[in-house]
Image (cartoon, rainbow, N blue to C red; front, side, top):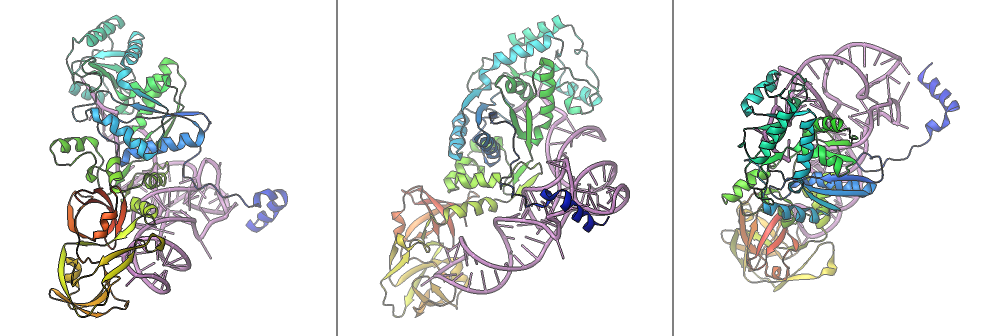
Length: 493
RNA sequence: GCUCCCGUAGUGUAGUCCGGCCAAUCAUUUCGGCCUCUCGAGCCGAGGACUCGGGUUCAAAUCCCGGCGGGAGCACCA
């Protein structure tokens, strides 16, 4: 039967098939089952949330808002490592960032407050012979894992394991001297899975509980316990943590617990920078960064400071959906979203970077130039610039246009020559139009790369309130962050 | 090396599960044009992609096998 015949036949027997199908909704997120879901976000408090962590938060928030249910904020504040230390300030910085993002959570927990629970369950595994205390060095453990060999500690008696466990808790072992490992199978195909460590010893002080504990659970164990105990229905995590799914399931099976559903998203990198909170912690200490809102950190605080709108960030993130593809995105994508929001909001001002002083020659019968605050909304009125014989224009434009006729926007046309400008006419010509100031206020622009640009901004700029976002015409969008000293943060073009 | 994940235009993304409505969606970018006294915004138009090779099938972006490419894990970090 030809295709045409098949279609004709099908139309007879199954006409519904040809009916127009409705358009699918625009969301990129696959539907979740259940309408009373429980999800969690688990930031590690080593610094404020950055743009990468925001994905985790926004996705969770979006799902919970869509399906109904609750979102739990669990500080994943186990002791970490020497490279990755929990930081007291980070707890509040994280909440602050989440609030700004519009993420709503309904419960807060701290892993550091749940240590007894982990101990209790760890001990159960030891008592049931599912785990053992291992005194191998990290190197030896690694070598065994690689070769798939069991070590001599694996088969010790339950009583012996419990005795050593008590000794660990008592503090009889020093860092690195003993760990608790789960028994999987040293021949397990995935080497990463072989007898993973569940607890280890760290004598580092914790910002919340000090030195109260020195036996700390590792991520996969604490989550296996908490995802069950806190009643999670869906667990959202980056695909780099996929092996943790397997570990959690393995542990749930031992306890006889119901499995929860895992959802993953791929790795996201911003072209402009590599994400690491701990790098920034170090640089901050060395004073290479100004603070946690330094634009180079890409923290949520820094984005807010620059005038990035939370809605823009949210849309930016939602655009990637739950794709498992590893992606590298340029920040310009975020800027495009942000521009959509702030363009109509931001009033316009003239800012002259690296000003060059010019003397106007010729007749000019205008003494006040009136320029709309917003080109698309004249109801906002005009800025008034008092015109003198002296004006400033950006150095770059000056150099590039020597000997040419250009237009001082909203004022007049000039012929540019060394340090002076001949007024040619005042009618609006179709030539290069640039911004200018007759006199101005010193202004510093903090650039995203940490550098600073300087120049003069028109005097009417003093009507702008701190935190307002404006556009410096032909320069970019900026946010006034220090009215006293006239410092603005550059957002984007 | 072992284990797992991914591969649609410059960048993201929809479509892949349940093969035909896909000569492939949308956004952004790029290039034209219009508009605008900004290199902003808006409007109109154009360009641009199924990683490769086999197989299954009347039919493959979609299913199967293999290659190639990218990522992650193999930490007593998260």
